[in-house]
Length: 360
Image (cartoon, rainbow, N blue to C red; front, side, top):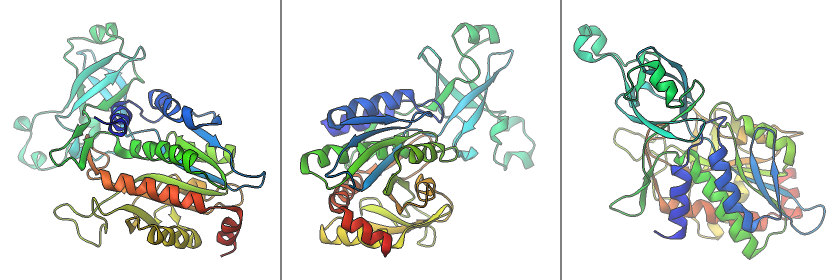
């Protein structure tokens, strides 16, 4: 396994639900450290490495993934030793039953479990045909009592994440893991600052990742207040339309066809001048990209573009199959295209160009 794949494995195998991103933050600091002149961390835990550009008036370019993944929190231990849980982020109940989970205690011990519910054999016919509500589910960790569970160190508030190992698939362009949303954005930020250090840039860059994106874009708001970017990019994940049943009315992108440039989502209309600039760079550099929109979702760019007096912002996303489930799939070419585009764009964002985007 090469160095980049090893980084992707470490990032996706790590545990980091909203509000408990410490393990991911430690990895981000480790990977960013060799390329950082300074670090900035806000009060919620978002972490960004800084590399200074030329001059005091250099534009401030934000390249932001987010550390958190959708997961769960233990809310109750019943007398028989079963766990009740609260979703953290958006989950579709139909993907959860019989899925393996890892409970992470405050000491860091990982305890395996599986999501269960009342079996269909005892349900009336009309109930069998309906999805089970998440509030009716529980996690079975093979315990016999509440006291036994507590003796293992499990408490309400502990983290629960899907059990899924990073896997290079038979066609090795496809990578399967949990938490691509949004450890792929974390990896893009790391790779981008690494290359920009080597190739140079006419601006001050802040590359890193926010916290608590999945529960309301919270870290994006606090880090924008701290760093005061001039231009902001949210590097995140998007919906592809290349699986059975999908139509071009629902999603336009395909795996392997490049980075997604998001024109519109439920939280933001992307800055027209920034879109034109980014797509022009992509064409000139022969970087594959796909124009797309996400009417039912949003990214950290929603908070970035509303910070201070307004910041031209754009979401650049990697299409990922099966977002917000236990396991998802990405294509290496889309990740590489995202890194290439972020680097190429950032290298051209000097003060004159940024001024033209603002005035456009």
